[in-house]
Image (tube, rainbow, N blue to C red; front, side, top):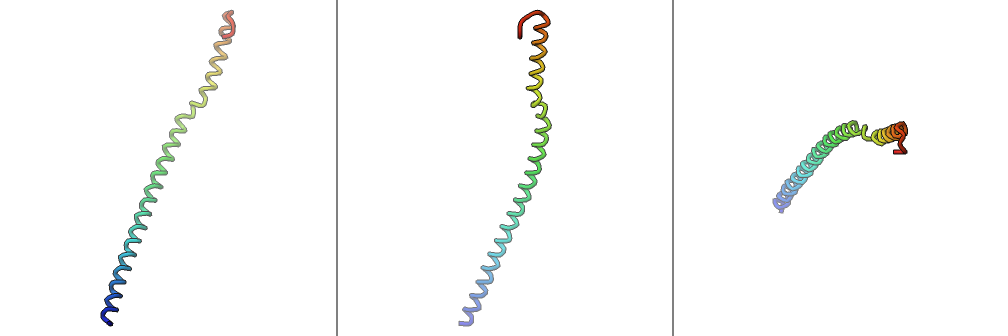
Length: 84
C-alpha cells in the first residue's frame, strides 16, 4: 500500500510539472505575440503619419477650386462676357 501511495505521488508530481511547463510555454507565447503586435502597431502608426502628411494638401483643393472659379468669372467679365 505504501508503494502505491508513493507511486501516486510521483505520477502527481510529474503531471503537475507538465501542467506548469505547458502554462509557462503558453504564457511565453502570449508575451511574444503581444510584442509582435506592439511592433506592428508602431509600424502602422508611422505609415499613417506619413499618409496624413502626404494627403494634407488634398484638403486645400476645394479652396483652390474656388479661387480658380473666381478668377475665371473675373476674366469673363473683363472680356465683356456674362457670368461664367
